Length: 284
View 1 (cartoon, rainbow, N blue to C red):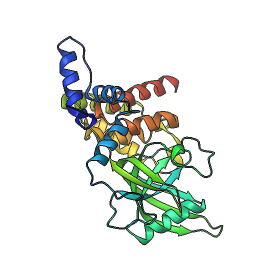
View 2: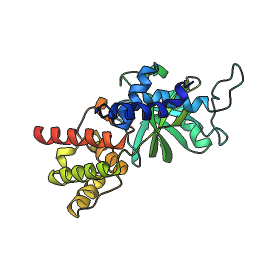
View 3: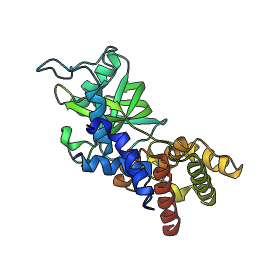
């Protein structure tokens, strides 16, 4: 008998059954529907649960250790972000002042420099708990650190890949047990067509200010210029990489950014980005 661990097979069966009735669902939509039917908040939570179930059972009373080392590849110190959502493959400067977050950074520096950056649900929370953070963030590596005279530290991080939070320990600082984020490419032809449409829309917005965002405070527009240049040459980047590169420079709110980060299906992500770009250009 099937249970939640067979979710992907169930989603495929659902798509095929509905297709026979002339009802079309994307891969992402079928996964989300199966997750809902099985009583999970969304596919990300279900996917993380499946991966957690596949691991050897922990001994009774065990918790995520407060310190993270090479033996704990899936456990990382957490750096909560107040008012930004970051995307993969960016160099992002962060200012850290909260005592627990400083300890998290110190732990990372004493080990392999890896952290998990996750956006808070409410920027004003000074002491966020597990319930105050979104369920999907990014693994990142601290590439530089500078201690400032006021006790805060400035770190430069290189964001790496999406990760789903399985569970969090809150003391002595936030530490996350993570699982790989489930990303799907969708239909290759459709993804390629959407990539071309996104690049064309980017190139049409010749004034880079039309797609400026809070990222202007964090980085220059080199990525935007590179993407626009690629569009002018008729180039098409790898769809997932393109989607994240454009998402990083779109003008949209935190909720929309987090939604893009949590959209695992690349086709759906490109569709959302294209819709946001068109909205932005109409408003400009």
